[in-house]
Image (cartoon, rainbow over all chains, first blue to last red; front, side, top):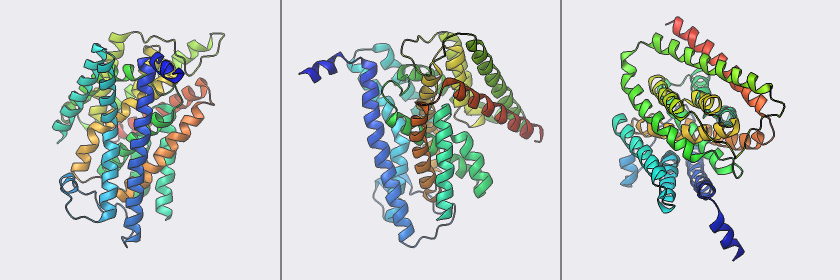
Amino acid sequence: MIENSEQSEESPAKRLESRMQKVSLVVSLASLALMCFGLIDMLFSGDSFSLPGIAVVALQRLISLHPAPLGLALASAGVLLLGLLPAIRVLLAAWLYVRSRNLFSTMVAVVVLLELLLSLRLGS
Amino acid sequence: MITILLLLGIGLLAGILGALLGLGGGIFLVPLLTLIFHLPIRVAVGTSLVGVIATSAGVAAFAPRGRGGDVELALRLEMATTAGAIGGGLLAGAFSSRVLHVLFAVIVFISAGYTLYKGRSGQNKSVQEPLFRENYQPRNWPAGLSAAGLAGMVSGLLGVGGGFIKVPIMYALMNVPLGVATATSNFMVGITAAASVFVYYGRGDIYPMVVVPTAMGVFLGAVSAVYFLRRIGTVWVRKALVVLLILLGVYMLVAGLNH
């Protein structure tokens, strides 16, 4: 009961910070673990360590589960997951602003997300 | 094995400095990776973008309560920064490399001068300035947003995250405490880097053998910086920022004049 009343008294900014911290921790550790296992597998499967080495697996091949060396696929998935983290954080902020009916901040977060999509489109 | 450790070490250094000063770390990674490992610039930039996101993630995941940056301020400024970055990216082809380098140096010198001036005027106050405080109110929004848009345009023109402009804007122009400004800038540079990283991924410029040890080092460095930031004062962070800005400005000016 006490814990619930404390949570309900928490300001939206503190709640957002707390959720963002949890999401950042889980996603970044998961992506680093994927990258680390991928690199270890690449090294133990006999790939010589020369820089820059082999490039990441293309997104289409990764999504369609096209056969690719396991280590390279794991490392590529880890990089993609880490790359998605900032967008996930903006999405989370937008969602929490919607829930706390903060219209102005929701619009700001949505504009940033749209700009991110536009820059991706222009970049590709 | 030595190469992996060296990449990890470079990442660690970039992560500590990048997170401590709110720069993301890309500004150190690109020259180090090209100079030491002779990697092509596109591979170095792709690796650096993943590194910047790792810095941003490390700070966000391990910052103590109330020190993770001001998300609302970050998103409002990022609106102008991303729009400026898109405009800058489209304009980049219109300027010569020499002009871009000199422009970079001028903006860096202005940032360093203003931060130094702001710090000196603060020294006259009898109470020592805290790195973090909650009861601040960002001010000069029109000027701050215009400067953030300009910072984004410079980022788009010069291919950098722009943390070295964002921190002085928030600290010196908008009255945001230096610790909050660096943490907020770390959040913002992550978003800016995310906009470009998939382009580099799609082009095949990301190489796991380079990216994985570097990103792990950067992440560990960023987490260590969160620990350091609790123990050092504003004066040291400000001094490091000014020294770094001056060195960077001189380097870019010389590079520009030699083009």
